[in-house]
Length: 89
Length: 383
Image (cartoon, one colour):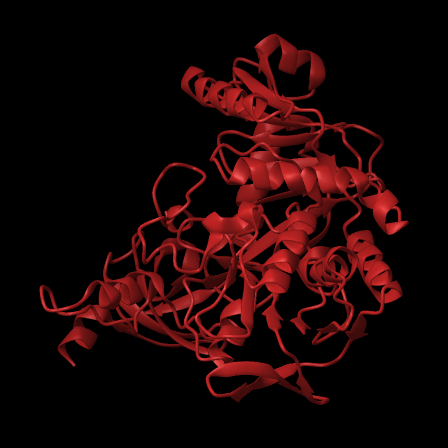
């Protein structure tokens, strides 16, 4: 079982969380960007084999959004931080 | 040059040699042939698709399956035992009726079953008043069934080899050779190989290979598990698809019940599953067939699926000259093996997509032409 270190709730089973994808993407600026920028943002993925930063929501816990570091080749889990803290970085 | 010695890559090589007279073909495989998803699937073949494009493509594939043992002179053990998709409510049965009508209009066999028909064919399902998902009926395709999956890789490999194709195992692609924005071959762990045309056919690692060529794709790699129980006497005579969840079950020639469900839910290149998914799949099995509850699981395994936004694959040229792509099969690649090989070979040989795969271009999201079989919009696999 993948176990995720929630900053609020401690290490919990992944089944308590909802996965929400690649957290390295940045939204194009509203109104300023071409359709190509939006296509790339919505549809294209780096899909790396290795280090990945990704969103998870602790839906059956504190309900907070997290950014987790995970290795997609081994499922080794690294640090998790609250997504709102990361947005302020 | 074909990268990937799986079912699709070997089929592509075979059809390039057999149908297009192109015999100067090499297939490079990182491990041994058939070590990837062609040996990790649940061996089902069928052509009960709803959307124009898919319907014709998968029927073409099923027709190729029907002649494959003869064509390859290798017994792939096609067993047309029939597949039944179940409906658990009247509206779901309406959807199956529509799908069946579309199939029949395309010359594909389909029979709509009511509850009594299903009861006669599959008396061991849960028809009790306590059934969590009551059975209203189903859709039967008698020509659907199973294939001995390893034999597909071996059969295509032997037939391609006999036509002069070079199959190079334990040869990992490390990068692409370029000349003036054109791909002219690959650098491998065993040296460089030059080729006029290079084709990617590597289920699970499509993004990884494409990144070496400088391409980002609409693909995420996800893990799908399958399970097999201890062998029992002949019991499940058909392929059954549960209608209340993504779950399918059949019985292997050795007697094990083979079943699987949905992807694990987050992108992963590990070929190892999470136990929670095995539990939910086992719950589906017991909800559908209560008598399997005491069977023991013999094995379970995982394969890596290239998931695309609309659930449809790519068989396409790419923005880079000399590079072709077959990938993004979203756990439906095995049944497509012969047609994917034939259409990809056509695409490579003619530098133009085969008419049956024109809707599977790499640029379709840019044009707003997503091709979603379930009719639910994009990203169904994430919901």
